[in-house]
Image (tube, rainbow, N blue to C red; front, side, top):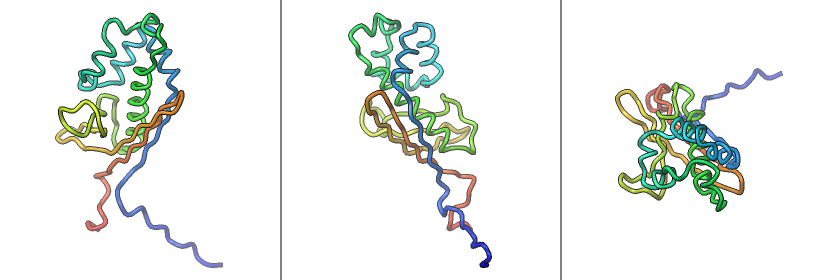
Length: 158
């Protein structure tokens, strides 16, 4: 019998995180005026809540079942996507103890409100960008995050 072969670690210090979120679950949370506002405040950072798109969607007239009479689930899809992206970021950064507000999902370009997005992982001294992708299909939002682990040595550092 041959001796077991050694298994080399993945050569680049990366982690992948993924998550899936049911839009109708988020919709049921958002249609409750107290739970919805608390949920959004807990999940979205002040920077994210300050985006024009979010401010207009989550204004005073938004909260409660009356806001959903027209069947507009666009805001719930948006929040579900952001929730999934942050959950994916948690999984892609297992070496950190992150909170929802430590992760900011924002457009790649400063000053833009649409276009490609990234996850900015807040640090004590410097922030780290992580790659993120959000997709929607029917009642689901899914996200993938690719995070860098600075605690592991790069192949050239070995």
